[in-house]
Image 1 (spheres, protein in one colour):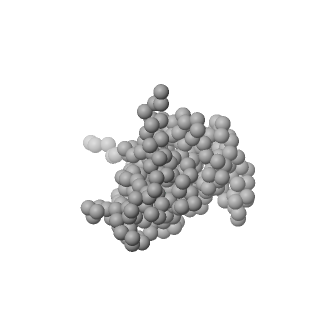
Image 2: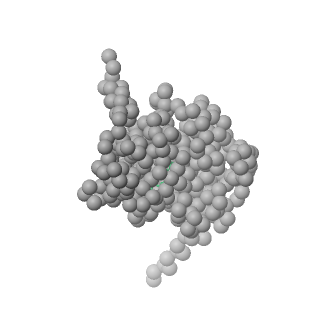
Image 3: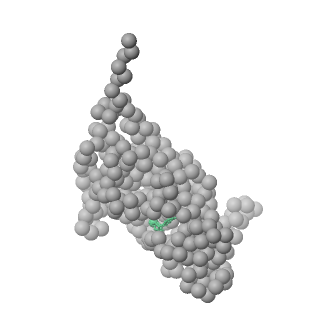
Length: 307
Ligand SMILES: Nc1ncnc2c1ncn2[C@@H]1O[C@H](COP(=O)(O)OP(=O)(O)O)[C@@H](O)[C@H]1O
Ligand SMILES: [Mg+2]
């Protein structure tokens, strides 16, 4: 007997491959029932627009590039987003469909743009602001890790910011459910990630070694870049950058408490078993590192005794 989940999956595949529904108008600036306002950004898989729905509500519409639209990436993203939609700190999926221009996802609009935009504007954040932001991301990611989902493509372009600066994890195009045997992507798919955020085991396509610690590496890289204003590993070309990830020692973080520098270094260990095992462990360590007792220079001076 086919289990109900398999039916749901088949139905979804049939729907994705079905002929496109008519757009509300032939106009270039309409996708499905969403009116396009402006282009917000693009990645390897799609172009994202700010748009309004028929009720006037602002949303983000991610139009998948045709070339990739029929591949596993769209299905993966859709499935993972459906499963994670209710999670705090994960971008919400509002709708999905196929327009004449290809399949699309409708997401909650992150008005603050991506962390990449923030970094290009601010260059870097102080260690405390950076760590607090990363703690929120790690806490949201911990819930996914507990469910066996790994993201595999965490980088500043894929962390979005809400109005109040709250970070949202987005872009589940390379995510993987560890319990799903056929949920593997080709190495070409994995190579679409950005090198400096990819752990050595991800770069080597070492499937057996992939796990939540692979995301922990990416978060370490992210925290490093937020504090230092440049990524921990880089190179003139892909090959150089990959060599840097595999071989280079992590340089010291400027003006950062030693405990926090050590935490970042542990996230960036070449050997996955030397890292925090999952985002929840990283979150606890970050909370400890942020506690005033560990940062004596910033601690409140003792209150003068009364009387
Ligand atoms: N929900 C959203 N709200 C605001 N901007 C978004 C949203 N989703 C994506 N973007 C912008 O579009 C870019 C590409 O989106 P992303 O989902 O990462 O596409 P890809 O899968 O092609 O990498 C992001 O880096 C961000 O700048
Ligand atoms: Mg992306």
